[in-house]
Amino acid sequence: MNLSTFTTPSELSHYLQSHRSQAMGFVPTMGALHLGHQSLIDRARRENAMVVVSIFVNPLQFAPHEDLDRYPRQLEIDRVICETAGVDALFLPTAESMGIKDGLTQIIPPTTMMAGLCGRTRRGHFQGVATIVTKLLNIVRPDRAYFGQKDAQQLAIIRRIVTDLNFPVEVIGCPTLRAESGLALSSRNQYLTPTGRSQAAVIYRSLQQAHKLAAQGERSQQSILAAVKNELSTVPEFDLEYLELVDPQTLESIEKLDRPALLAIAGRIENTRLIDNVLIGC
Ligand code: AMP
Image 1: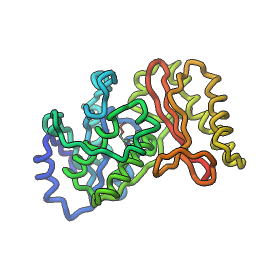
Image 2 (image 1 turned 180 degrees about the horizontal axis):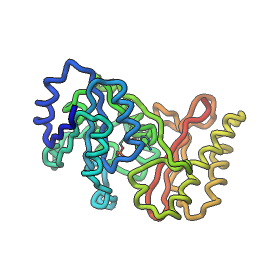
Image 3 (image 1 turned 90 degrees about the vertical axis):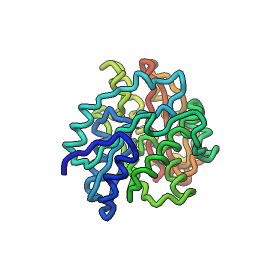
């Protein structure tokens, strides 16, 4: 089937109406598609008869000082990637067609899930994500929606919203795709120079240290975090924002590694904010 493109919710809904008997997979993105996005699309392609991808640089999830205006946009390339990957419908709404306006009804995830990690510095971010993902799920009404484990806090919050609000969709978490150096693929990697990219590999290297320690039986949060910081110190250009060990579902802090835990990190290289995480102790 050829790729069909839609810019308003009503056009997309109208098109999808005649395909409702088929299993539908949905991959929401902000575009500047890379192999990480493509892995989600490929999985959706394997598991569903219909695949819908959205590209929407959601203004609600950017604070005024963040990179909304310079966020990478490459629509023509993204269109080719979707076509080649066998996507059926590409949804490219505008802020206007998504009804973004002052006074918009907002979805507020549990405050305990937004208090730490990225939520600590990105105030309002997850409310913006939750509101737009809710709107997208209501517009597309997929059977399955695919999200990356790379954005682990987002994934946990979306799972919680879907459960709490009884959305009739299966949320599928997908593994993080990485460059050979271990650096998690991200649209924001485009901001980095080659030197910055190679320095940024320290992020995953440090997480791997923790993974190894946990596999050897280390259970103390303090020792695990210390090992990560020790590895990070080999690249002084990395400016650490947070390093936290949390429960992967509730996102609450874990003191002792007596169950699987999410070790999550954020920081800046060349003033580009990067995040990554691994599951340890499982
Ligand atoms: P974004 O366009 O950054 O909002 O990402 C859209 C979706 O792709 C989200 O569910 C992300 O978690 C996922 N994603 C981003 N980077 C990767 C990656 N390196 N591997 C797997 N999934 C990813």
